[in-house]
Image 1 (cartoon, helix red, strand yellow):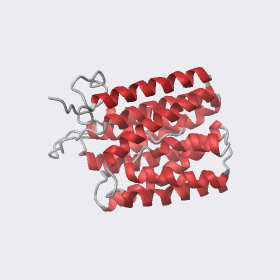
Image 2 (cartoon, helix red, strand yellow):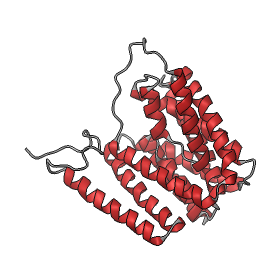
Image 3 (spheres, helix red, strand yellow):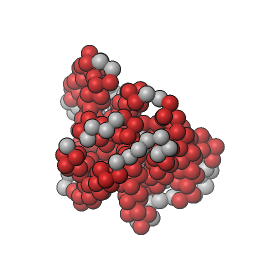
Image 4 (cartoon, helix red, strand yellow):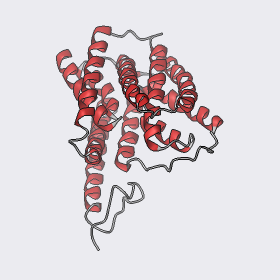
Length: 291
């Protein structure tokens, strides 16, 4: 199963490289249900994988000038404090509760991926940094990261764009710095009470990094919007599996059924003028072709 885990980690990395984020949301279920780790060990190991892959991705963005270090370090510093606290608090929370929280994080991530990223108009340099808001949101996002082991890029990017006033490409690059910082902080909090199998952890991390490089090279060959939406639906299905495992089969079936219904409505929205999901899914992703 370790060989299977490492092989699947490559595909997680490919998703990260193609999408610029999101693939890490699969790391915890991969480690918990394929590698057989307990919940807290899977979350701690995921933080290592997320931290390293984000740091590697941040290097290329930094070389291209797409990292705003001042904003990133402020948000990242607050995120580190929150992530460390989350990692420490996790010892008092049952693993099942953490996995249920992770499933809810998956649902939120999937919705964010289906909505897509709205472009932010670049500032003219006079934008005033909302220092207090950035610190507050950094603490909250970091706490979530430390507790459930997800990078939370879908929360970081909008925060940097809206509160930090960063153009989207720079917000994405800066978010990788923030995610790396708070992932490592969350990991250090977990290490106070959780033992990690470093051999497996490093093998999975290396596989994910290799996959990320492969994914980055494939970006010119695959439509990123179509891939992002397909991945979002896949994450919703995976969240149903976790809910079935950790709560009850009926809950997982209900979640999967809702996913199928939502998928059908989404499909209909892309082909008809009437769309009940239009308030949920961004208009630039669901376009009416009728009329």
